[in-house]
Every structure is written in C-alpha cells, then in structure tokens.
Length: 142
Image 1 (cartoon, one colour):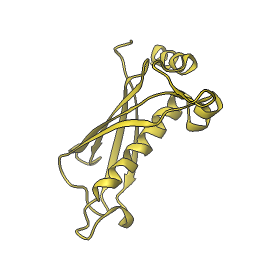
Image 2 (cartoon, one colour; image 1 turned 90 degrees about the vertical axis):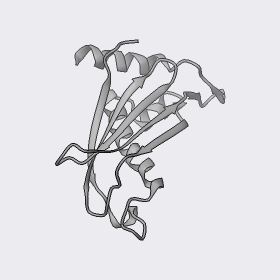
Image 3 (cartoon, helix red, strand yellow; image 1 turned 90 degrees about the horizontal axis):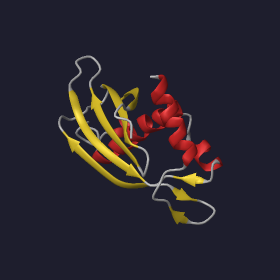
Image 4 (spheres, helix red, strand yellow; image 1 turned 180 degrees about the horizontal axis):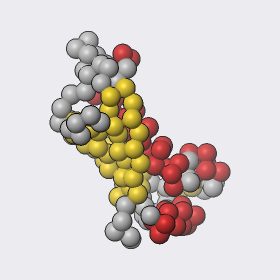
C-alpha cells in the first residue's frame, strides 16, 4: 500500500439540533460530522455512495471509535478532516475535528468499513479493484 494518504476537509457550524441542554454537541452527533467528511473524501476519490452502489458494492461501517478532547458548543465553527488510512482490504478512515480559527483539536476518531457484494450478499475481504484503482490514480496525481 502507498504510504501517502488522501484526505478531505469540510467545515460546518454547530447547530441547535446538534446540542444537548448544556449547549454542547451531543456525543451521537459526532458520527454525523464524520459522515460529512467521509462523503467529501469518497467524492474526491470519485467513488460516491451512488458510485459504490452502481459498482455492485456497499461499505457498511463495521467499527467506530471516538476520543473526545474538548467540547464543541452551539454556534462554533468546526473543521472535520477525514484521511484514508487503509483502502486495499477495508476502508479505515481517521478523523480529526478542530476549531478552524485556532487549529485546536477537539475530537479524534476512526471508522472501518468492509466491502459487501450486493448481488452475492457476501462480505469481501478485498476492496473492489475499481475502487483501489481510483485511489491509486489519485495518489499518483497528488
């Protein structure tokens, strides 16, 4: 596997519907922030959710971990970075949430996803070749 890594960033504002009664982001909503950055990363690769499905595969999340460092509060801006750490046998994506103004890291996390063949109904222990090719082509350009 190539030692270089692909990443994508998104920025968003902590909205009222993301926070609890203390105006702090409710822990479950961090998954939504991860998803926004993961989607941007997959679109950068040229393998959006629609492209996945059209190629005959889906990639369900199999593991998720979060480390809360500092709370995010109502109205704050947050930058979410997703970095593709592994892509040949599974997708392993690392996330980092930070305050754009200061760069202060608030949250870190990791998800893993496994390819699932829609037609056969079977899990795959190697990612589809067309996905690997898209990643490696993009890595060669960067």
